[in-house]
Length: 498
Image 1 (cartoon, rainbow, N blue to C red):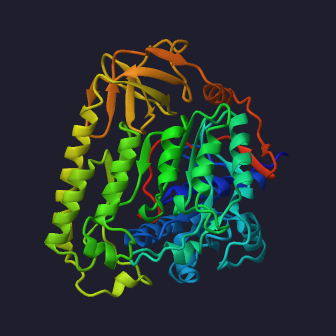
Image 2: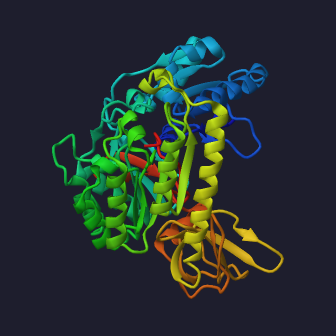
Image 3: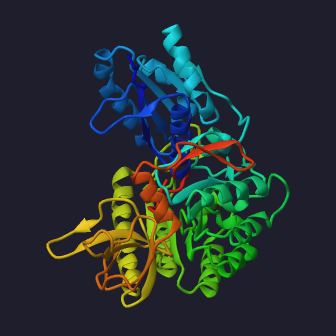
């Protein structure tokens, strides 16, 4: 009698780094013989890959664990694992609050998950493994990607900054950089599989090279990506203003496959609050970077992160933030209400801003950001843009079938497409379209496809749908098994917001 594989489900909270880590967790589990759980089925193993940036992350995790407790009692052999930043922070506290958890593993212990699950099963006792430092770069681990045409590529992990609101450096450690040759080998291997968009990832991505003493390493890496045949689009996130140099702006502008898009956290427009946050730039420096980027790339879309209600923030400080937002004219912004995180300097600062004040300021910021984003989107009407179509059902109303994708500047575009599947683009295909309508958070192109280009990315998506893709491959020179790609097409807030 054939014994079916144990199934798994991964629930991911947090930033791009966590999303990419979850792909590695999926690859490890499938490499160990597990299978992804089907729709509407209960998995044998549920893995929580957690975030610790905001207070509600704790509440969300423990609420979800509580909901699973009665399920686990009725399913002998079911296992629950908790990893990620909250696991690194809380460690054994998780078992105190939820003793039915089987495995707790830290940000540096991703590769141990299958072994820990088996050890917990055999010993019938919870296993906790929390390393304090990174032993090997996680990109050497197996990866199960969700998209056939887009992929994250980590170039560094950890952060050397000391922002007073941020707990992530304590949980992810100091910055560790991969060697450029290893990064480019991974990118080439991904392109050979059909990937045509990559997003370079790092907690402080443009500080890349600090570990081996090369301040120009990031600009060189962008230019090197431009020399890889078949790589259509390159993005990166998230940079820090203090590390933004002229050579990076030049590399962005002069490398055709580096997209005219920049996500650069502001956090506050008040110089006084930036100093309290230990952000080593001031508003004039931030605005000068934006001016340089727009001078080099006039149609670049710029997005940001902003924290409202940092300790000691006055109405005048908040007004400074609104002024910088007006001058910057962001295409979008991830906005956060300040949240106390135990273990950060800001948690014990005096003059914590009352919740009602934070909420009122937050609502004003949201209104301004939305108004500006809508105005900026309206400038796109009548323009021809290239769209990379994304996986998903698309949108349909009474008269029009639409598919969604991202323009080169990362704006979301809903495109009218033929109903005939043979004339319709596939996820991963590219087309030029004319923008006919602008909303605050998306664009619409209802005049049809001006030029459809069927791509290797679309071929890879189609092969996956037909079940004809290889189940495992190896990235050249990395010993890194891969199975398929994430879609870094939808923006995800940076981790930390800064």
